Length: 525
Image 1 (spheres, rainbow, N blue to C red):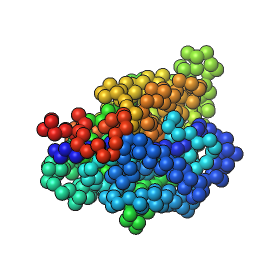
Image 2: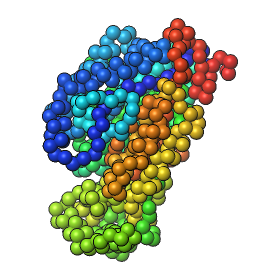
Image 3: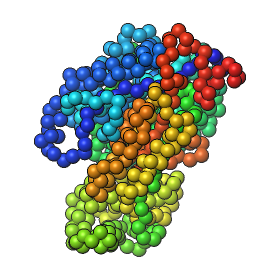
Image 4: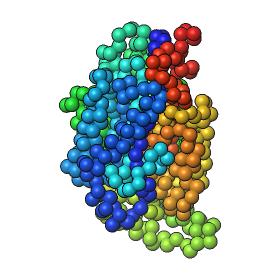
């Protein structure tokens, strides 16, 4: 491998300390202050931080090959959202205009919320939505490839789009390669997906299968790992946007409505990863779930649970468990009529179930990949509609009722931290991305947790590295896709991109340094 290869990551953040809340006046004030002008100020602050981080390690903006953007905001009407997103993209482009790196790529998307971090705190409520924006700058002298999907509307189409998205990234990569040696190097595909919408189906796992198909049929690609995350399942997904393109190619930097973008990155095969997927407790015995074979998409509409009507069984399970919990805690007994009325209203008006404070902590678990938690979304006629389809091949599938468990969530946060730390520890310029399902935070709030929360555990433990943390309604977490893609709907996961060094390196001396475990230096060939 060429001795001039190098790889670093830097992160720039700006956000305010907004907490989940229901204060309508505060919500209106935040929205009033959302504007393209405020967004531009926020971007300027983040880019200043990013440029300072690069400079302190002997690099400049022109050394950046891939820019990963995460924008966190409170949803506005489409027209205003588009103006805000467009102003952010233009601000980024203008800052990079003075560089000569026409190979610079940008990918990213908006997210549902943001976990607190300590890198940069704004003094006032300003900026966009939840008021968070983060940029991750990847520095390498190797090429980067990008691709995008064009919409995940059916299982078959999603598989085709996954294959095309990976292929486009591969084509983009190979067009920049000057030496055939780079074609044979291991690479990682970073995938950012938009979650399933309330009025549409989520097919992220079929997208993953398309990526697997591409890898299996394109030997030269040699993708080592595929990692990814999705944001904004449900109502918020209707307000999310994605970004894709080469900077300096103005026409490609428009806000997109596609459901996935990806980047093909060389030599990203030994990152540290942490994953917690057991924030739930099983309730009762295993049940047989019968899906409605006459409704599309398949494996999304539960017709019966055992021999019972799914709504009757669902309401009975919730009542019995709530009654048990009330008795254990010495609280007043739960009223069975209240739960029955919630279900009845949902049946009559097709209201969304997952956002109800009682029903919000309950879900079903099915054994595809690991046991994956899938929340009921709403009632459609006599069926319970799931928030996303289950991977299966027959209309019957075994599963369990499950409940969110705040103690397991907090244990999971410590597990994520331990997994991230165990491989290589942390250094000054490492960048850690954290994705936590917003339901985990809601379950903590419902349990009365005001301290020692998952966000506080991760924030304290990872204070020695730059953190980009995000709340999402659902995440797609998958790696080693040659084996099996996994979906975890109540997960917390993170990835640490290790920088080359924690100390300042003069720019004229940065050539010829390899990263052990990432990129071999000349002595290791």
